[in-house]
Image (cartoon, rainbow, N blue to C red):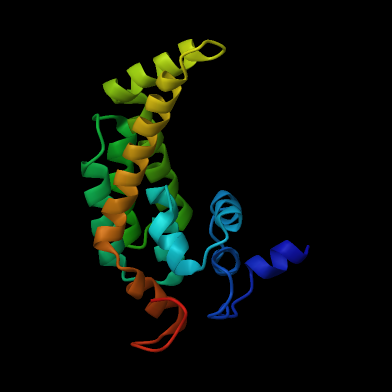
Length: 187
């Protein structure tokens, strides 16, 4: 009950609140909130270290960042993904529909998340690394696991960086708190 009341709250989160609390108040995905809570950073730290592009898009959308900027960021991210799967096309279609206000935030972020997962599954280098990781389970080859984890992390962080290049944290901060400049704990 309390969780739903907080989710539906229209109050602007406090500027000095922890990053996870701001995310929770904005109503982003629970996975993102749990990750941010575990990280224990402020909102700027969450923005800078977030490992998922779809989470960043969700935050930008819920904060109220300009629609065109969000769509350009999504398109840039999708075009940088390996492979040519149906989820990539669905993410591009969803971005255009969202720009025209024909779908909601969930319908924008879910195809992007699916496209990211598809990219992780279809990238040949990642596929080889994952196979090596699974073969190394229970054996004495921890470097294969490390290589697979690093390859996956590099792809995810690279896609998230594409979003951060197109949408500045200051745009998110301004959209949440309506400030042009100011002495906030966030850059």
